[in-house]
Image 1 (cartoon, helix red, strand yellow):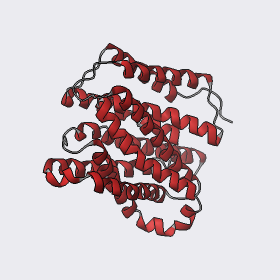
Image 2: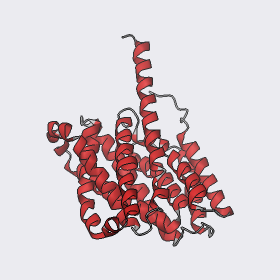
Image 3: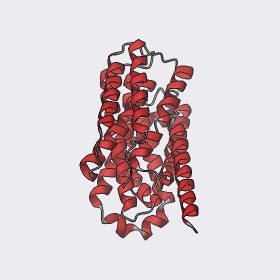
Length: 305
């Protein structure tokens, strides 16, 4: 295979990885609206069911690679613990944040903060530099988050916007953490299936006691149960299978940027189905966040060495 063929194969691999991450983001964008169809189950129960069951399914389908690569995985116990804990905290913070601030606001803040946290993490741990443009775009994103927080018109699903935004930021941080951990494990010779299966399996086990403590509504209402099954199998299981395969050829920072399709899907569904509306400050906040994400996703223009 000549250099051109190798370059084409690399581009093809990145293209497939990008497409799979985008599919995952679209599936994830349905979760907030889906959760509103399970009114008897609280956000903690929804999060525990979705990621707990979905995480265990991830581990089950990866059982073969996990056995073969157990030694390689266990060489990174702190990474495994950090990734599993992040997977467990993420859905609890994410669904609680959406419950309190509204589907659109909670999703936008959680997913928009992910790339910022990912870049900070890569700067602190990996030494990846942050240029002046990144700092400017991050500041614009923070301004947008502040505008969303103070906006008072969010429709019927909003309950406590400031606390919801805070929890959404926690979700963004933990999302960036487990994405980075998965990428580091893959960089250490662990396959994507094993990396995702390991950290999601640990996260699923950690969420089981939460599900047992809060999941009674799923047994009392078939609609709540149907929502939980959908959340666990479609967005959480299938979505993360696509995401894990995509991470083979897509960096953690790029992956978090690509998944910003999710807030757009979530906002459209929240407007069309849930009936949420934003005030002028909220609209300006989303515009600021969108502009910051576009800026963050553009190439730096610096020549690669």
